[in-house]
Length: 274
Picture 1 (cartoon, rainbow, N blue to C red):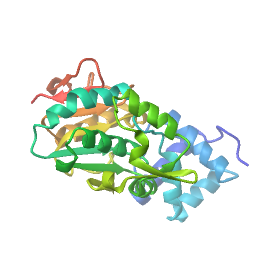
Picture 2: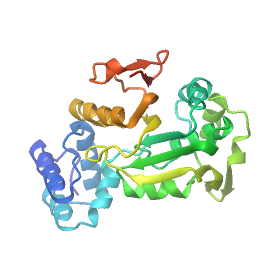
Picture 3: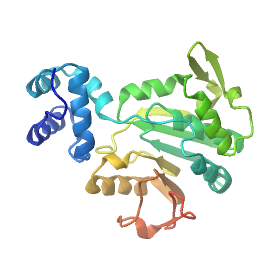
């Protein structure tokens, strides 16, 4: 079995160029430290005995690409993650969105969909869901398929329920799902206004105009140039006076679009002012 950290820098660059040329998936602007960990993990999990074996599999077996993308992209998420963020959405941002005749929300990098269902619950409780559409996108087709089912492991539900209550939730969280064995299935009424689709933040363009965009804990895996490119994409996709929400370690500071945005009370939420 290959040893951890055995992939050399030049080998990683070679592999990323192969994937970009063969499959049009460009990971060359992802941070190298994260990519290195994940490439080594793939080698360990799939028992490649050398880098050459990994490269041969990826370049000669197009069906393996899905497996590669699943492992190389980060899919850590939870419902109502950072409850304070959701409380701010609930108390301050949704009331402004409620003044719009129609609300389009884009959750970019939605992973397995926990954030999409969290936003759907907020919109329901604010009485805004009937006039909303939630576009949940991710580069990884495997997680999009999981997200569209609305079925999650039951293990983290206690944590999700605590997060929900801390975010200002007032109902019994269990009223939103049904438990069966070790899984829970969320009410299908929550997904009536959701559109799940693959979207590559590196190469795909804007596809609509939104009043709220969430992209949390995704750009931390991008280098500065790619972060700037993705922020430009969000700027192109956001209506004037719309809102952009990022992760706790992400910022608009020193970006090209910063002058057109005003941060909301120190939160990782910015409003487009022009």
